[in-house]
Image 1 (cartoon, rainbow, N blue to C red):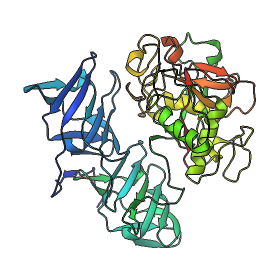
Image 2 (spheres, rainbow, N blue to C red):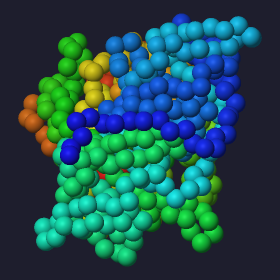
Image 3 (cartoon, rainbow, N blue to C red):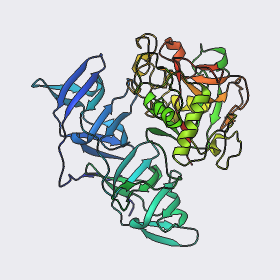
Image 4 (spheres, rainbow, N blue to C red):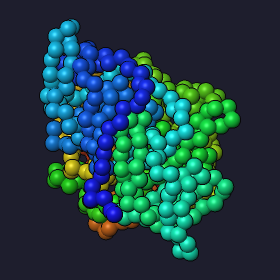
Length: 483
């Protein structure tokens, strides 16, 4: 019998290490409060189920900007993130021994001082179409699929990975440990998982993007499938394909933001959750024996890398691809390459890490298919989401300190301008599919920077510069087509 709704229950693990619940709370009025969280669990609801998670498993909660709806909850496990709604109206804390309750609408962000944890069990890693991902135990002992030639039951212990497509129960591919690959339709209405926090979630296959079965090596190390079909880097956000209106949609924009036109993506892609940082870029420089760019005396670490040219940015992308054994995205002339190393102008055919196209950048900055239509990336209130001339202190700031947009992307407005793959061209009113402009004189810049006024950090604003140009307000973020 089909279930009429997702059934969720909470099972506490038999052994649970209670972590320190000290926390740092950033209030909407600018106050910063060091305290202790006086709650055992956080109640959360997502598009795919409701659950409780012990506070000892929570690393960060980012509350939605006014008018937005999605709260982001990150756990102590690597890249585990949930987007949804906090069911607890109030957060209970202890401040210097005084019990206090804050309404959630008064809070910007909570960082909880729990130690990060590594995965030590053979589990599954589930990627959802919302961009969420989590670890857990797959409770179903077998998976039933209908291929074009036979119906099969496959033991989950024999599966390496699964990928799903469509809103129904369509299973596009299942990879088995013996090297077999099959396409078919999954017969289960729900797949039930037990999260590391103890909650059980029954998730419709139509909401799942992929499932990876994490295996231990002979040395006892947990290892993700080596197949590039399932790989992606950490700190990447899934952006579901769709359509949007590109350009100035509010009126009063600059002339090169017009005419507005419809853009459609027939492929999904990953976008860097944050702008590429000095930590990340400096590792590339050390590995390749390159000179490190100046930080203008502002500090390195988690600040976005600056003073890098377009050529520097694509060299970093190619290095990252080679490090992960992926085909390079660019040749020596800056042309995009497909998986076979042939020049292409179709971003959907590029496998390696690259810079986003201008259309991908604007679609993601607007919130993709979750967009609420904001002028800035994640809010109509520029100060909620952007470092710009009025609040930046005349320098870059560490990435991820402002609120994210609807997709969970940070600093798409302000902090630093970001290089895009395209040459800049004029807009046309004609509808476009998977656009990429592969000729011109100047490469596209997007997003504005720490020294931009508010109107210059709008999601529709366009910039451009010579690909050899470097600047203390210019960096980049990475992108990758979902294979």
